[in-house]
Image 1: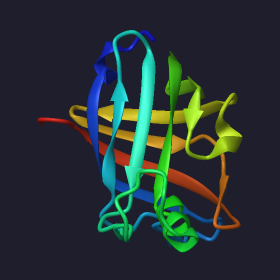
Image 2: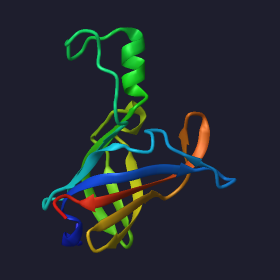
Image 3: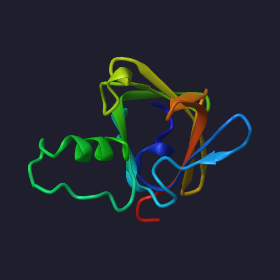
Image 4: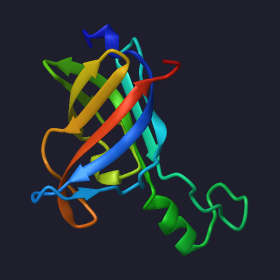
Length: 144
């Protein structure tokens, strides 16, 4: 990676998808939680979730009822791996992802850095809840 200004911890401020008609969709609600971490040795990890997720009835890390697991899965996004910068895009060779179809593939995101504010956007529409949507997340540098 050749843009050291992206290195660090970033806290999510908003996470929204737009459909072809301009409609807005908030798959993690209007107050998502999470972070994007970019290391000096070119690794990126993104972890976003809905605010106020329901706790499982039991405290078993890999447990939970089928309904509890489904609800948790529907309110969480995570992926990461080695990354590089090409122009205004960050390219991630996905080594781990909550969505198994992304593991072993490549995720590309356009970015815009304005001081301590980082906006990342999908470079093409992706499928979310059976809809073709373009995503955008706004993050602030942690500690800013």
